[in-house]
Each structure stands twice: as C-alpha cells, then as structure tokens.
Amino acid sequence: MRGFLHSLTTAILLLMISGCGSLLSTPAPNDLYQLTSPTLTETASTPKVLWRFGIDYPDAIGGLHAKRIAIRESKNKVGFIQGIRWVEPLPEMLQTLILETFEQSEYFTFVQRQTIGLVTDYILQTEIRDYHVINTDQTGQQVHLRIQAKLVDRWKKSVFFEKTFEYRIPTGARGKPQIIAAFDQVTHQFLQNLLEWVVVSSYKMHCVEGQPCLKNEPTE
Image 1 (cartoon, rainbow, N blue to C red):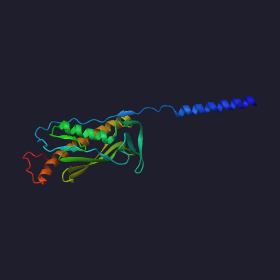
Image 2: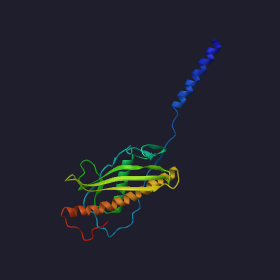
Image 3: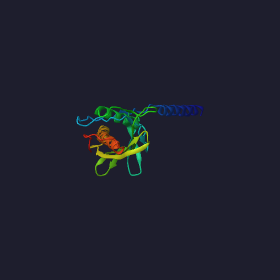
Image 4: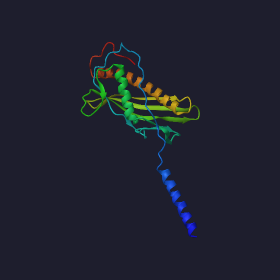
C-alpha cells in the first residue's frame, strides 16, 4: 500500500511539473511587417505649397490603434490574425507614411509631425475607421481601408475641408504575404490621393480666405 501511494504521489508531481512547463513555454514569435510609402511620379508643373503643415497623430477606432492586424469575419465579428503583426502601432506607422509621402513629393516648403509647441498654419487630422481584412463568400478575402481626413486652420481652430477615403482590394489568394501586399497596395492608393487632395485643398483654403490664388493653381 505504501508503495502504491508513493507511486501515485510521484505521478501527480510529474503531471504538475509537466503542466507548469507547458504554461511557461515560450509562444511562437510573430512575423512583423511594415508598410511602405508609394513611389511618386514627377509633377514639376505643380506649385509649391507655401504654408506650414503639421501631420497630427491619427485617431483609430475599434481596436485599430494596436500592432495587431484585424480581420472582419462577419458584420458584427472582428478578430485578429494570428502570427503576424505590424512592426509598430498602426496610427504611428500611418503618420510616418503620410509624412514620408509628403516629403518625397517636394510640394511642401514645411511639413512635420504636429507636436505641442510646433508652429504651423494648417493641421492634417486623420481617423482610421476601417483597416482590416474582410472574408467574403464571393471574392475570398479583401483588404478594406476607410480613413477620414480633415484640414484644420490652426489659428481659427476650424475645419476647412474634410473627406473620407475608402478602398477595397482583393488579396488574390489566402496567405500572409498576399494579405500584406494588398495592405501595401491599398495604402499606396490612399496616400497618393490624400497628397493630391491636400495640395489642391490648401490653395482653395487661401482662395476662401480672400488670398490671391496662383494662376497655375492645381486642379482635381
């Protein structure tokens, strides 16, 4: 009897040790991905934007403020894709991409991240409302981007122009590389159109304010 109890105790201890080992095991690492800014075509005929622009830190809703990559499995169900993440929080990455795109365009004489104490004429505010994968019965998977942008007069604290950008691009196939490629493609489309909208709107703002408009003012 004593031998049986000893064996039973040993077995229980081994199970406990095994269980602790599984709890302390290191989870599989996530693959980290970073989006890129688009390659811009030359637009030498477009005049410089003479006003000082600040790029505000984007707002995000519905869990889109983190590094996790969201997937909408149904109308009311949102989850996160396992095993992959953005290299930094989505709003931080998007702010960097907007700034890089604006700098590379060479339209702007002054454009920086909007920070406390930075003196600017206008602030670009954005809100990420949709930025996730969608499962659909018809086309498999899509990447859905919906971002609202506002141009704000820093001194008057009023919104001059606002626009919602929305795009859907199929991933082509189910897989992590295809998903990231689709995110990159839809983000390029957004950044190029955002850039054009800001440049055109900046001249319209000065026309609205009674400032003389340039003869070669860009048009949409």
